Length: 242
Image 1 (cartoon, rainbow, N blue to C red):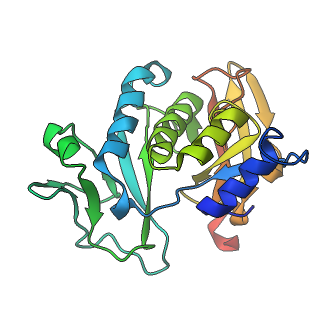
Image 2: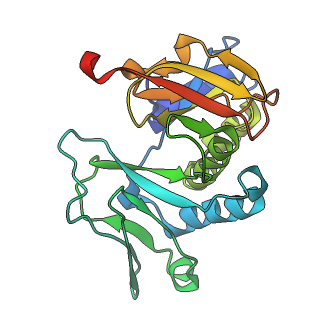
């Protein structure tokens, strides 16, 4: 499924909402970041921090971190540096070996409309929220964690979207709460199959929920038939076949 630039996102929204466009409704819209992590403003990330605090009950045992994921084939975390920078302030952010980092509260950064700057070329890395409840098996994700990641991501993304696009998306249904808008997730390894599991109930998800050879998966965060404690379990593609 095609990733959306702002113009493509607008066209999809026009088709999705008959009030703004034609009668044809697409099967799904994939919401992807329109800007690189080094161009995100601090205020946008701060909006994500607010949502995390407001909806923390979905993953009460998890902290909020963010993670840098490679977009370019030669992307490397070696000697990577990330900072919040304004006209009169600069605050370095520690990036862990796994690419995760935290964004602190900073009144100075908000006042100066500071940006998160990365010492890499645009297009090298993407950012994602990273919410992991302790104790979840390595081949699974807790559904509440994914829901909270989605909520934080949407809060950050929509902060910098043009008003018209934001209005159209919300009219179609908030991305984390509707099946009409699909939000992509990056898999740690290529996935062959996915299952939802909770309290003895287990259901395999359609293969259409996997894209790019299983490197991307679409989690059913909108499906309220499954509680936050349900697990999304992965069967990974064997290393020999990758």
